[in-house]
Length: 214
Image (cartoon, rainbow, N blue to C red; front, side, top):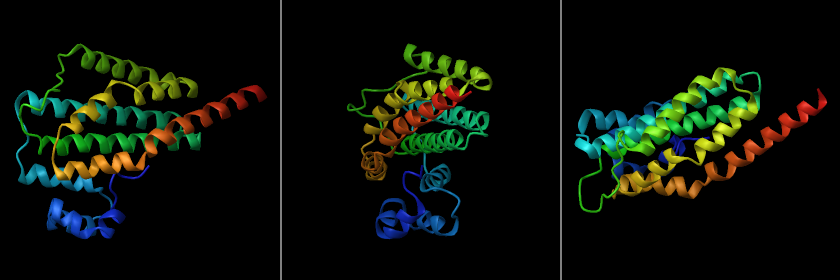
């Protein structure tokens, strides 16, 4: 899976990127092909902007950390099934996508402002967040012993779970043109919602076929 907004998009729309994010960010994309736009933005904002503070800032930090933790979980699954090229590719793609989601939350951290419209401010003390963290911890312990079917069930659970709900609600609260661009690209691509279930189904079918031949 590609970055939410990759280098080729920036090259096709230089005016939009410069208008939204500034010349320095655009030049950075030209000079460093390894980083995604979101990576450049997070680096830029850390140096030149002030993040939201208090409960509001903590909500976006919490979401980012959960996204990064899921990314590491998928990376561990990719390593666990390294000998299965298709499975490893799926988990590596998911890991990279979750990293981008985490970077979106960090970008939101520098744009979100307190106001009456911000009605969703999750906390690490919330039961649903604590349950998510506990479940991630459990899955992390299980990865070394997982078979492929168990890993795919865990993937389906994560993709349809609370972490993505929190991400979506927090992103929707940030009314800034910069973040709207990422939200629009996520919605327009629809790659995640369409391809992940299909790839999971294909891997399950192939694993079932292999088991029948043993």
